[in-house]
Image (cartoon, rainbow, N blue to C red; front, top):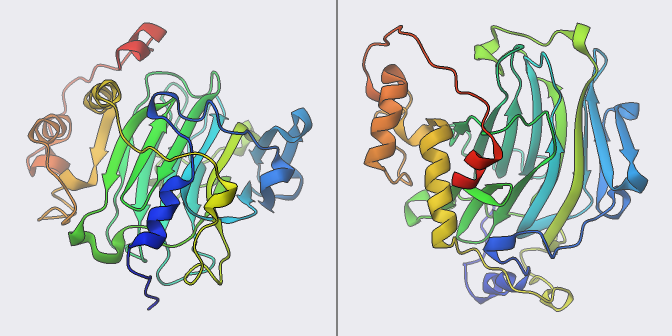
Length: 335
């Protein structure tokens, strides 16, 4: 098993990579064209460039899905894209925006995921975040959420901030999840260089109601649109990253991973209103929560009421559920 060097001064230099002030993530960072930062991963002509390479359309049809990958590997940084998802019937469709090194470290890979899970007509897309470190795939660290907008109506920004000590997921610059490194995790925190990926593919076996609803290619092609692509981090050589420090001379700004009080309030509001699943509270999977979990009693109680079987060990009551209405911009302002 590969061992990384101690988290000493060499990795502290990584914290001088990015100028990202939490109240305005991405606003001052360069937006790359496709050819400047990415290569096609698969899909042949199911990947189409628009706006002189500033936008990318990925499509799924009966023949194949499609995807792209960053040209470089990164050890920490800020990674972002504005994404518009397919509309109408999207059951079984999975759109993913994620970081991984599974091609290099097959048995001990790291991964940081945004996954968008399609649905039947009239039901909303769901969004899932997940984290793996050092091949710890036996411990799923999923959280799942509804959104306060329709992600197929317009573009919205989805971002990942990854440092030596924490990972933060953002939607439209609102933090929705903060994952901190703890001593109890050992090597399970993502610590090796990763590439950035974007894909669309057929996840019929699991994505919608556990595989009950599958992709219906009558509605194909399913097209996911990507723009405002940001890759801002410590690009490293995949062979020499253990012995060489990141070149901070080429990066002029400072990384700030502090969540402001205003942002924390918005994150708490988002999680209270929109989180529908969190692995730390899943009593059917984990009789004892994984060691990195910090239990929030209010979150635990709310999720227990939402799903007493999964989060409370109780019996499910089949009462009427109130479908949330589409939220206006005024609700977004209150998150």
